[in-house]
Image 1 (spheres, rainbow, N blue to C red):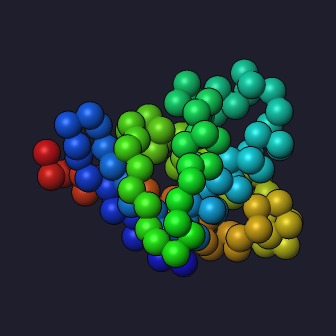
Image 2 (image 1 turned 135 degrees about the vertical axis):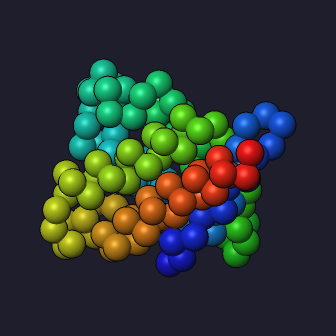
Image 3 (image 1 turned 120 degrees about the vertical axis):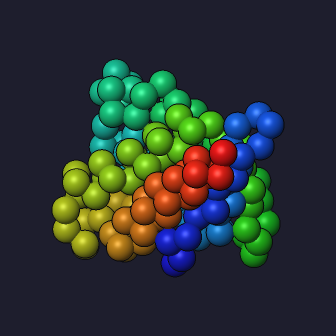
Length: 126
């Protein structure tokens, strides 16, 4: 799985381009995080207000053979990054992570890094 996650500026915020596997990892990570942290107040503490809409953001209809561009806010990308990094801390073994999320830990870490780098590149281009 690529750890490159292109992020660009638009008139209304940001646009992130995700491969089908990156989108699926984010969808599953969001579901897993909600299961492991069932209290909405605790989820809000970790992810901020933007975390509440991640499930809907990552369950969009798409062609599973093509990358997808999503209009997002910086807060949504921050919440997605926090979801991945928090899961990496909460589920420390590779086996348990695979059972919960369905992806290897290195994939989640790579996408988290890609999100951080993508936002950084978008901010530098301002």
